Image 1 (cartoon, rainbow, N blue to C red):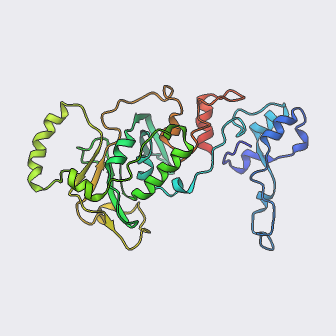
Image 2 (cartoon, helix red, strand yellow):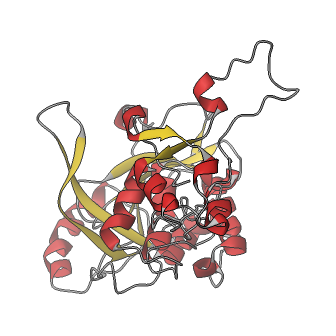
Image 3 (cartoon, one colour):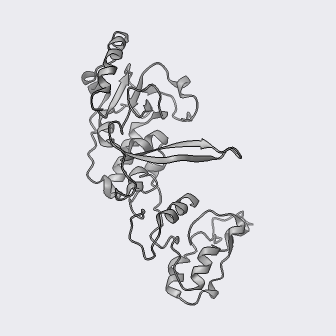
Length: 317
């Protein structure tokens, strides 16, 4: 009903015959979508746990339905998320940041007990010049060619947020899918003709003679507005690998076969924005989780939902 992941002591067996005050709300909320029904594909005996054979409901939803009211956290209250398409589900962490129109920055710390992760301080949301950055990156000629890429706050910084290998074909496929389903991606234009050859002709390549000059330019750069884009170090025409099965979260510094690394800063030079000032902000920051761009915080709902309850609902899904 509310599609939350809860502990066993937070739910109870759902008995539909006790909810008689508002049958229309009951029909909208209790869909039985997650109840397993044995069919021809099931083994004998069925290997699905017995708990999946019945319908469960949390105590909050049970209390509301007993009184004939729709819970504010019910999925039927415009909180249901669309299924993630394959083109978006296959993206790694950095590829998802590349297609996001808003980048969110937060300080993640480990809690003293259990070493679970928690957010310390405020989450800062910064608009990303996603279209400019993606169109400035070259397109590999082959499926096995990957780009080594670092996501930074500013391209001149040595530190980085993420370091992954990026498959531009997956990024472009995801953007084409978002153009079809996401209202905020309808007007983006994708440059399909950017190749390594064209990038080498137009882009200046760094070498050892430029490093001294770059150090002198840093002081002048601090006094000028930042420009968003992709900075490339010792351009190489991609990584030609026998397979793409290498996990992206292992030591990327060891896997970087040389010094050819793209440094990108899509949010560089942009001012942070308020979470409540931009419509559908979370759908722009996390298009993988909101592939259709609907059912965000500012969506019109049958039952009013506070921002704190909305955040709690999303965290417990």
